[in-house]
Length: 83
Image 1 (tube, rainbow, N blue to C red):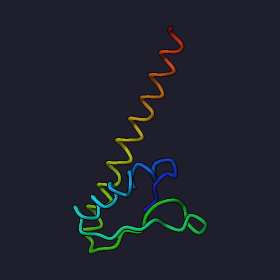
Image 2: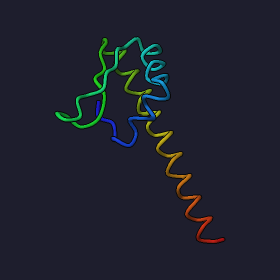
Image 3: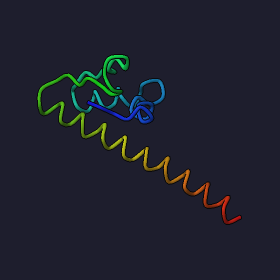
Image 4: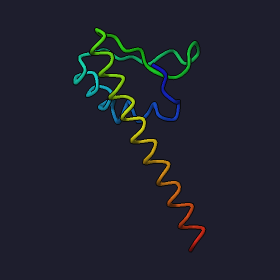
């Protein structure tokens, strides 16, 4: 499963807690792809339903945290511009 390089840390989380939680909730085993061979992302192992659930949880995390980061940057830029 491809994930933007700048979002990998959001998915893994502090001390790997987020990725562990996703694995527990979905019943999958998730490992990072080899970034020298393939684009950044994760291998998701499990049955079809488990993999689908893990992909959904990863996508939610990427969208939520990347959007949050983008909005925070936007706010900082606009505060500087209008101060």
